Amino acid sequence: MAVPAGRKSRVEGGRFVRSAVGLATVVMVCVVVAVALELFRGDFTATAPVTVVSPRAGLVMDVGAKVTFHGAQVGKVASIDERPNGQATLQLEMDPSQLHIIPANAGIDIASPTVFGAKAVQLVAPPDPSPRPMYAGQVIDGAQVMVEIDTVFQQLTSVLSKIDPAKLNETLGALANGLGGRGEKIGQTISDLNHLLSTIDPSMSNLRHDIAAAPTVFKVYAEAAPDLIATANNVSTISQAIVDERQNLDALLISTIGLADIGTDVVGTNRRALTNFLHLLLPTTDLTNEYHDTLNCTVAGLVPFAKAPPSAEPGILTTIGLVLGRERYRYPGNLPKVAAAGPSHCADEGLPAVPPGMRPPFVVGDVGANPWAYGNQGPLVNSDALKQLLYGPIDGPPRNTAQVGQPG
Image 1 (cartoon, rainbow, N blue to C red):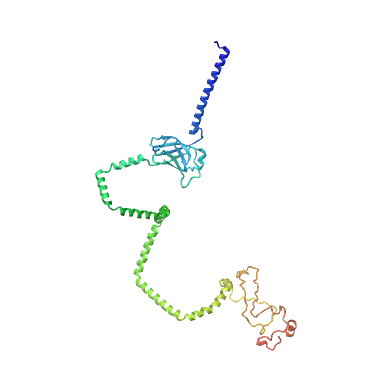
Image 2 (tube, rainbow, N blue to C red; image 1 turned 180 degrees about the horizontal axis):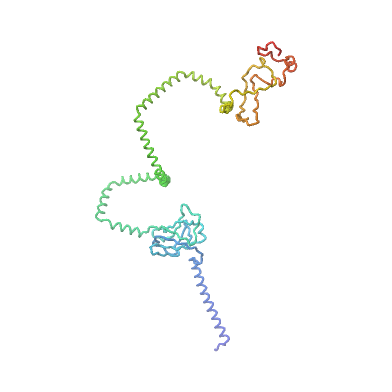
């Protein structure tokens, strides 16, 4: 049966479309798988290159190994190259978003979590971290590589090759004979050692601090050694001088003992008199202490006079003036009294240094004499009647015998 030409072309077109769609689907699946793999490998992730130069990379260090900081992954190993001098160069691909938390002077350790496990690059924060963070293109030197089991075997083989088996057998036999039957003592020794270490363990921090400070202390002692030696020499000289003068020293000690005995006798004999003297002196010392500012003011005020230069012309300079008369001394109203009291005005008035133009005030005290008893600053009228009229009854006549019998 013949197929029409139009229908045949439609069938062939449909087959082509299905083939194309199937091919495109396969291609898309492959692309998705490839992109997933690339994303898993991190090929599309932006990285910052950092180079690590190490004496060796060690075994089980592969491309893609982790780069960690404080246990968190911050990058991976991109490549491992060997230099002509035997050193290894590790190209790291660091996460740019993590570089700001890593100091630029961070150390490098190439280690693995187990003896036979895969190695990783561990970034170690230094005791004094740099304020500058790690940056792209940085080159870090001096990586420390963990000791590996093959290195241990190699060193053990080199040691065993130097040992004579016969002598080793003799040594082990002697050691066995020496330790035979002493298990209990060895166990007790180990127990005592464990107790000792447990006692010392709390002080390990202090011991580490002392060891760290020991170089500085030794340096100080080294700098002070000449002075210490000189001091020791001087002590030796002084000791020798004491030995040479031991007779005079004995005489001095004997004299001191005799003086002490005499002093004890004198003080013991006069103990009561000294005690009474101190008790009697106490009010005077209390009063002196109370007015020590005033006494100091008085003494300090006399200093300029004591230090003043002598007069250019010999003699006594006097100033004489005429003043108004004052009331005469009368009995018993003007008898002297010791009743003045009050604080010192020395500090209040700026004494003893009196500023120019300033006159210290006159302090009136209860001493039995009052120059302003009547407030009379003018001429005095020699009449008791007038005074009694003005001021009332007054005391008796003056005590001056030359004026007895004269009007008041």
